[in-house]
Length: 161
Image 1 (cartoon, rainbow, N blue to C red):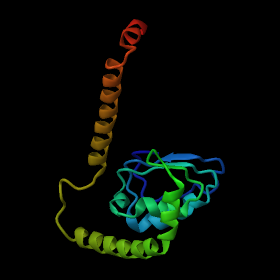
Image 2: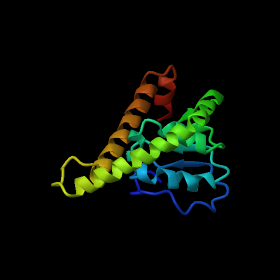
Image 3: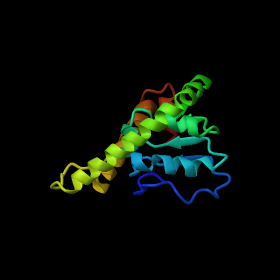
């Protein structure tokens, strides 16, 4: 579901066996994080999530908030969730929930203000997001190519081609 103009995670409550979701480079903002995570919480098999490139990832507590809210989650952004990470997130949940309310209100106020301002050409747009995605794909291809070139199996890889 990466790069799909998603601004709210919804309609997944009945996906009983959903285990992994990649929501990279979408438009989920801080004021929709709580509802989106509420919907994810109903997916009892969810194990792995990816969110990089969503506006809410600017909030400093987003990872801990998600870890605290989703007890079945074992990986976030490709990183294993440890017991200590989960304990820290759970202990700080009340503080994060309050901060989320403040951050959401501030973001809504900022959006209202920005709507009244002239449009910025460098804003987070569909085109900009697509460009970022294509750059990331190219970076991964280059890294894989470099890995294969530096591999001790280089001669074997060339033989296979």
